[in-house]
Image 1 (tube, rainbow, N blue to C red):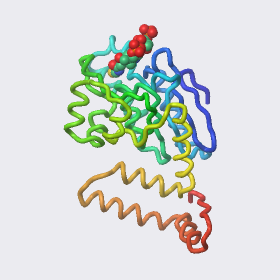
Image 2: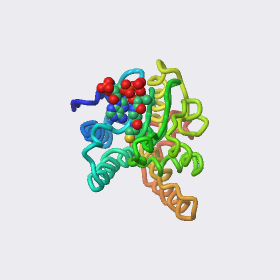
Image 3: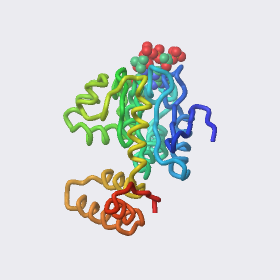
Image 4: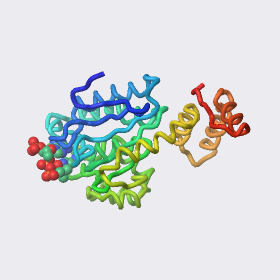
Length: 259
Ligand code: COA
């Protein structure tokens, strides 16, 4: 599929989605949201795609937020509808993807851009990355899941300060907070991210999908443990678990089929 605001490519089963509005720091307008949604559908539906990377075009920004120029005409109901549609079409769909989707954050990740990175399964950042939720500067709050995902990731008090001050943090601080898993130089960002995904590609795809599902349903009560137990049991209904165990016992590499 071809897109107006995205560039996509498939390399070694990794689908690379590059948001391509560098002149507007890759801000998320209506078209970008619709197109990311369609690109994520490709991740779900194309068997050749085993994982995806979301990144931004240019050296300055991953995504500098929702497109502020679209805010002027919004009122209460349309504002709520914008957030709801975006969350369902893009952010929740990324989070719940059965295939890993990783954010390669190559510059500003602000507002909806920070939330887009947070919706991904993990984040690798370049050394010039900057993260922030500056919505309060505009009289707004995060609307694409920021208050929820960030709080889960960094804890209540850090999330409070981060969102109430609207201040940006650099890549090192983001790594220390646990927002970014790793910080690398910008010229190595995509290669390092691809390398991690290539490692994941050698594992059983159905097990990977269950890891995502169970971690997304993290719940530190008996319910969370019960869900893990159920999904662990389900692994034994796959052909891959037999292949994995046999390969170990026969001292060879497994050949997983995703069945
Ligand atoms: N929505 C719409 N346009 C945006 C944008 C956004 N979120 N972020 C940047 N742009 C546009 C700018 O308006 C500018 O367009 P122009 O050249 O037509 O005037 C262009 O992208 C470049 O941005 P500019 O502000 O000139 O770059 P800078 O290096 O001086 O500043 C930022 C970079 C990221 C600090 C600044 O652009 C900014 O604060 N952006 C908004 C961030 C934000 O509040 N996001 C949350 C939205 S809810």
